[in-house]
Amino acid sequence: MADNFEGSTEVIDKEVIASLRELQDEGEPDIIIELSDLFFENAPGKIQAIRTAIEKGDAKGLHVAAHSLKSSSSYLGATKLSAMAKELENMGRAGDLEGAKEKLERLESEYEKVRSALEVERKG
Image: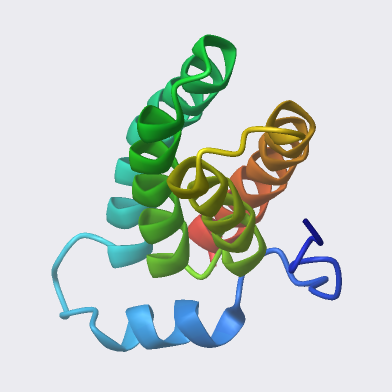
């Protein structure tokens, strides 16, 4: 299965961040901080659920956990991370976990890049 995310170099889509900032109400807590806090709170558990599903050969579990990470990543503009999660989601849906462990390792590495990029955005 070919990787669909190789051409993407931007860790966080700046247009998505700009769109989220437009939703910011004056006097309210910073929307980027609020959303990234939720992401930082939930993503590690989703990644662990993906890892557990792969280790157990649980295709349905992989599908569900990867779908959830895909959605939350996309919402914050982490398009490459979202694409990686989508690929794992599709593997789970198809019941084909061959190569899933290697894809998970790349996903975990990308998550760390997203985390760093969001930390920068939180200060902006």
